[in-house]
Image 1: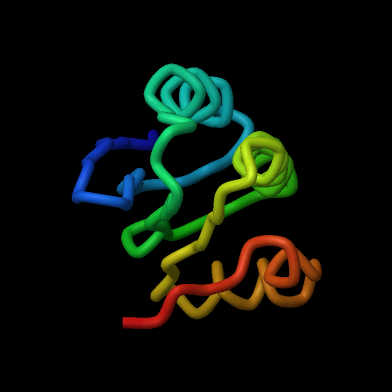
Image 2 (image 1 turned 60 degrees about the horizontal axis):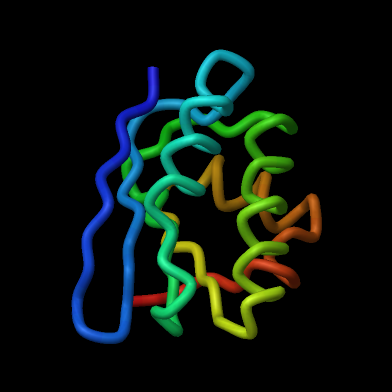
Length: 103
C-alpha cells in the first residue's frame, strides 16, 4: 500500500510517499503524479523518505515521471532516507537521472 500527498511551496512541488512502490501500487502512483503534477513549477521533489521498498516497476514509474518533468524543461529530485531503497536506486543507475536531494 502506498500513500501519496502533493504539496506546493513557492517554486517547488513535492510528492510525499509512504509505503511500498511496487506492482500493487505503481498505477496509483502514476495516476496521482500525472493528475497533480504542475508543469509550471520548476522544481519537483519525489519524497521517498517513508518508502520501505521499491521494485523495478516502481523504478519504471519514477523514470516516466522524470521524462515528463525533463520534457517540460524542469528539474526533478528524489529524497530518500531508507538505505535499502537508496541502494536500489543507486545500483540501478537511476540516481544519474533522478539525483538525490539532501537535507
